[in-house]
Length: 354
Ligand SMILES: Cc1ncc(COP(=O)(O)O)c(C=O)c1O
Image 1 (cartoon, rainbow, N blue to C red):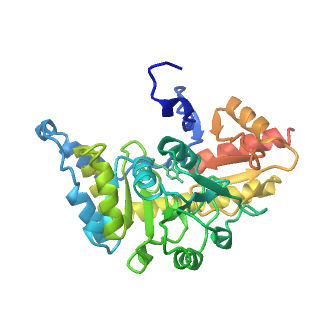
Image 2: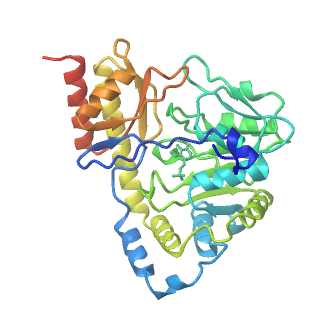
């Protein structure tokens, strides 16, 4: 607390990121990073871009990267906005498109940064409960709103909403923007990007942090009607005109150019996920269906917090949210096959000690 703070700072309730522990030799399954390294082509491109040109500002509009993304998703470059992580893109989205008299709607269980942005930008909002099975019913969003946002597949549940339901939502909300945060879509979800040309109120947000193994590079983007993108650019150019540095742009372009590596690593993560879900069900866990690079699970007899603490003693970190409705769940990011096997062994020891 300080008398020098602006008024809004006193009221903020900042996001708490998952722990980035300093200890070596940990199995880190707590922040949904990709267990595989970035494509070797990404590393080579970043090395090549590490040259004397770093004395120069980067292209403020990241034109080259935007055209690569547009090409990849069959869009025009003016339908793509890029930012320094999807968190930054989302922040601009909240400010540029979701602040209205009517409340913004999002699920009661969703990405916990959404209410934080509402606090920062003083946006009226209302949470809409997921059903008893933690599924999102689009009919629940047929109410007055100044915008809708949710992650699809959702975080931290991992559950996905099919595309026809998204389309239903878009048709019934033509007066407000519907934002679909597709941070995890490449692990088995269906992207709504193909609907962009039909729905001027749709904005889809992606990140390179998960499926492209680039959480450390901080690149995200939004795709939508050119008018929505123009609004985002107005906010971006009132905040930071050069959000993507030269190395990030070089790495991100190379990531889109190595499609084989991308598909191969996504397949590997999904296969490990499905095996882990089966193993955990065999151990008595209830595991929600996941279309992401994590699973969300609870055990009927063991408290999630206790399991998390015990795993930590075995050098395995998972995420536990002390929040209403999900206090009994653990969110476990998908690691390599070896990491997954270590997790299952530790759980076996904990739940069925010899
Ligand atoms: C649903 C969702 N959206 C967005 C993000 C932010 O990703 P980044 O800022 O790394 O692009 C995350 C990160 O965990 C997430 O879970």
